[in-house]
Length: 103
View (cartoon, rainbow, N blue to C red):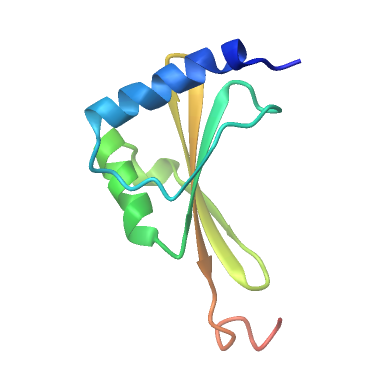
């Protein structure tokens, strides 16, 4: 069972990131009870915010992975801090013309 104490390491990493990079956007931050060694940040329709994080943390573009679904494209980058994985994901809605009109 997760307790508030079990969040300690992730909250410490998040607080350190805030102290080091207070200017970075924080669109959607998730600390999940299932992935106990991970902090997830999602950027919807904000590729610039995603890029800011990559630049600030020195994440190389060649390490970013991505995919395309019927209506959405995504990019994901992982960054390790003190045994905690920061998972950054950028989601961009595709124009219907780009998907061939598929819904």
